[in-house]
Amino acid sequence: MTIKSLTALPVYNEVKHVNGVLDQVLRFSPDVLVVDDGSSDGTSDLLNERQDILRVTHERNQGYGAALRSAFDYTIAHGYDVLVTIDCDGQHQPRRIPDFVTAAADAQIVSGSRYLQQFAGESAPPADRRGINMEITAELNRRLGLHLTDGFCGFKAYQRSALERFHITETGYAMPLELWVQAACAGLTIVEMAVPLIYLDEARSFGGSLDNAKTRLKFYYEVLDRAMAAAKSSLPHGQKKSLCGEVAG
Image (tube, rainbow, N blue to C red; front, side, top):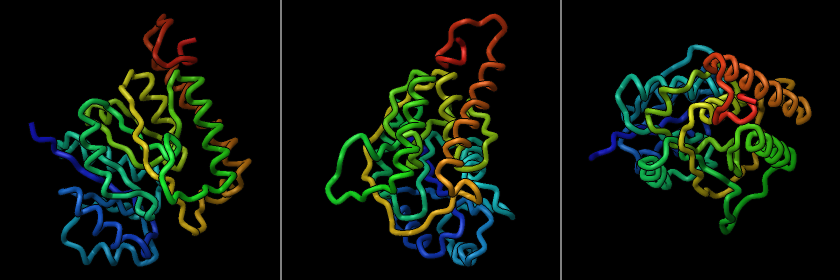
């Protein structure tokens, strides 16, 4: 059976990287979707010149989670079996895309992990980002009964059956927290795949006050609490046990 796969990139103001990354991604994926999330730095002009990609355009910047939600919707609407998501900032290696597609034959979510194993020549992550990742990943595991080592890696593969179970409302970088809660509550099969830890020497904004690490961590807990509460309210009346761990408690 031939697997119909799509690789999608959420893109916002990546004029320095977008063409180079897309050239590489197209070597390993026949169908490539770019979700241009309201770019204003010339990225959109570069995309307009390409005839080798699929494209969804947000007229205004809506956020990382909103861009991925558009990719999910496109995958379902166009009958793809597997969606691979990869960032456009040069921190992921496109040559690993076929490995993610292959692994998705046996798991509904294949999630990249930068901390599952070490690779030669890896970068050192910013201390605050590594600390937040460790804390929130441990909290996800505790609350949901998962066994993740990296709760935030954007390099993933999804079976369409997984995408059909999601109802994503979080539009920003905290979107993975909502996704993990919904995945656990749906009993989706999840595996991690080791990927190299690559951080570029570039500033990254999480948006306004969220650039402050303490504020961002507090916000992540708030999003997780909301997602857990929403999952609990959706349980059938009287249900006492669930794969959602604390949700059913």
